[in-house]
Image (cartoon, rainbow, N blue to C red; front, side, top):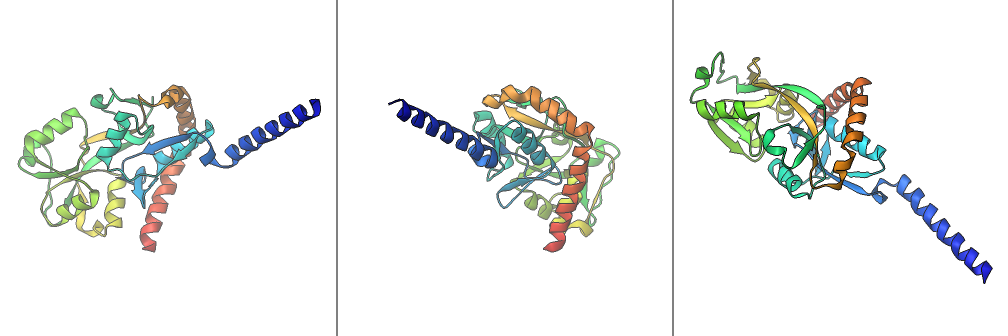
Length: 265
């Protein structure tokens, strides 16, 4: 009888250690973190073929895998849906988003941003625009994605002086800009030129050097996610990655990757 019990215990321990080894070897066997992100801001964040790429997604993946989780970077949602799913608690982490007061009720932000990026107005070279005061932009049509915001003050000024038109995708916005259906489009100074090059519009576009704002891309955890308990570890790991220069290296790496993918097309 004793030998049978020892055999059973031995088999149970073997099964447990095998399961632990498999979990360590295969991230899919670990508890999973669901992630979504902004779909069109390379090199910081973009979605291609249903997968999130970029600096912020890589930072999130490395941090949570270091905490023992598997990380799903699959995304089919639009940006607006990404925010809504995080609000509902169906998404654990948003890899890259601006810090806005209206989102604080359902998102806990990282203490520090992953990246700071000036946002500028892009225009068609067939319809150049200068901007010294907001009166210069009165009546101009500006294109934005549903769910996009650039801060309460900036949003209010654009709504006051300009005609704001919303679309579902960045491709639509670029097409409207080069065809003259909108006059301006606010984009990050890092991601905007990369997107324009990918879509073949780079030779047709310029931008106003004066920034609309300087935006900071944060990591956000849904307040309905149990992962919210890990925010202190996320903050510490992010600071270490910034201090070591890893985030800067990732910015260079993903800019090159994005450009190489364009050249290969």
